Image (cartoon, rainbow, N blue to C red; front, side, top):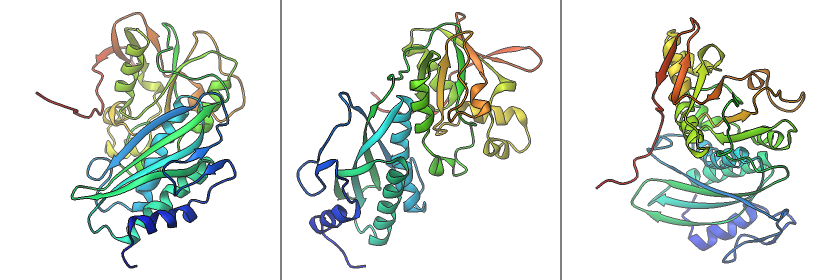
Length: 310
């Protein structure tokens, strides 16, 4: 496929991402104009970077899916419906057109699966790696779920098995939009929620800190450990648990429910998601409760970017 300039590519994208009737001004102008379905919008923005979030030989369609779905998982954690996406591309010089189209197809497929639309963005080239950034816009039909609403005594839940994301789950996960929207409308008090992106322990600590709380315990026997985590552990159960606690990029929802209350029947939650895996404590620290009844204090370890240094 011959090389294409930025303006010709933008015109092509206007056809590629066909605008629904709710878009007044589609791709091709300085900004998009859309009809907001609610009084408040939910906004988030996440990039993926070659060498950090995916390898150089990763199928570009999977890269496109991942960058969209990372953002949609953040909307899910707020209980939001996905509406619009903005896509920003920084392409390495000489980036193959075939790879670019696979990337675009992955983005479009993920957007269509979530019922949202790409309405704009930007494109540039550099000597650096491939960087794709998506801004997602949504709205809430129920309550807005937040990470700072957990309370002492709350039961801790997660919506999916954890760990082992490096065995392609980090590229192929489905954002839990249906689960988040259902939790936001549930009559039972679902207190706090957040996306598990950096590992269960680290994200749980983030929730505790945001909520002004000091500790929590997780029951090892209740943890939903993924098949991938077990595969990586080479048959060692303790290692599989560590993967489930620390690996990150699970993109399941971590949420808490008021003490003594049960989630209503129906909805998209699995049986495992309805069973608590622990509780919020008055006691300081993160604790594991082992099958023999023993308790172990653990550090809030997971994935964290180093941002700046002196």
